[in-house]
Structures are given as C-alpha cells and as structure tokens.
Length: 302
Image (cartoon, rainbow, N blue to C red):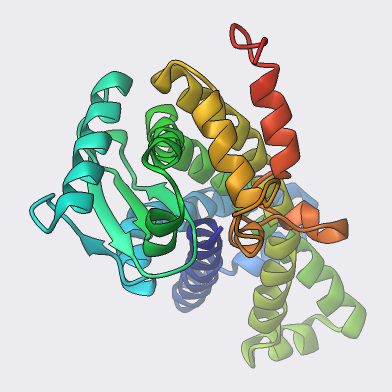
C-alpha cells in the first residue's frame, strides 16, 4: 500500500510541477495553452499537450520509485552475508527469480509491521523488500509464498503497466482541468481582457493546479481498481512458482486474521478497508483472494 501511495503522490507532484513549468515557459514564449481550452477547435493541441506531460509525470514516478521507497521506508539492501535469515531470504529470492525467468532483484529489509513489496522501472532491475515484522511473524514457507507473489509482480511488469495506465489517466486529468478552469474563468468574467488579467496574476494557474489535484485523487480509483486485479494475478503467480496455492493461502490467512496467531493490523498495511474506502484500496479483501486461490485451476481441490 505504501509503495503505491508513494507512486501516486510522486505522480501528482510531478504532473503539477511539469504542467506549471510548461505553462509558465510557454507564456513567456507567447503561447497560451490555457487559451486552447476556451476554443473547441483547438482542443486537439491541448490534448497532445496533456498526453505529453501526463505521460512524463507518470514516467518520472516510475523511474523514481526505487529511490523514493528506499528513502521513505528506510530500506537496507542485503547481500546474504549479514546472517542466516538474510542468507535464506537472498537465496529464496534468487531461486524464485530464476523460476520466473527474470534477473535477480535487489533484496532489502525495512523496519515495520508485516508487509512486503516489489518496485522498479524494469523487471530485470527490480527491488524486492520485506519488513522486519513479516520476517518475525511468518514461517519460511509462508514468507516464500509472499516473495513468490512479489516476484510475480515483477515478472508481470505490473509497475510498468500501472505507470502507463496512470499516464493515460493523467492525460485526461490535465485536459479536463484546463477545460473546467477555462469555464470557471469565463463564468467569473465575460470580459476577455479582465479574464486575461486575472490569469496573469495566477488565477488560471491556481485553478488548474487545484483541479488537477482533485481530479487526480478521484482518478486514482481507476489505478487502485487495476492494482486489485493485479493482486489476484500475483497470487496465482505465487501458486505457480511454488507448485501449490496452499502456502499463499496460509500467508493470506495469517495476514488477514482468519485464524489464531494472525496480525489484524496488517489489514491496514495491505490497504484493506470497507465502505467507500474500498474504492481507494490497493488490495482486494483477503477472503476474496483466498477464495480465488482455492478455485484456481489446476489447484481447485484444496
């Protein structure tokens, strides 16, 4: 959950900064992108502008993903020479990566409650990290299943496809923020010169930045929906790599508090919430994931 939240926040910040800088630079060059939003015949250039900077914001987030999580989550890269647990962790990741047909990812440990994640712009230069909490609370077989889940994310290229999805969403967020900002400016004043005067003092910039942030937050529901779908695929990938869905089922049950000895707080760490909050959850309910694994062919009879 934290990894995806950092990705979304970095994306919002990158898009806001890039479009602001681009608007200022173009204004100095005599090109007013905001005026294109006021003329339906000029919307195609505006859409092209939105696509370029929407994709740029998403790609910035993608390429900064490893750096951001390392710094924000205090990840410590390990080589396996630190101790027995670290050595087992590195060997397990190496074995799973070999089975998945990808290069050995960087392995890291960070302090915190039970969780794990994988990130990186390329599947052959990824980062797989686990928390101290998950290492303490899970059996090695359960933890191996979780690592298989994360390796599956890497093999499936989920960060890249999520970034492309986010880029398309950014395109429409920028496009419609310009359109709506133009409508609001027009409503505030019917006088063209006054409208331009207000824009020169930053009203247009402020409106667009606020609208981009609001639209971006609601648009993140689409990214979260995609993330939830990819969790099912990663669970299935773990079952494939381990040859059975049972270890992943056991790991999910421990995380979800479905049997004694579990960690209920981990549900928050994995983005499991109810009500409208579920639309912003990066992971499906654990019960749904367990049921999907139990019905997974050819492992249906478990």
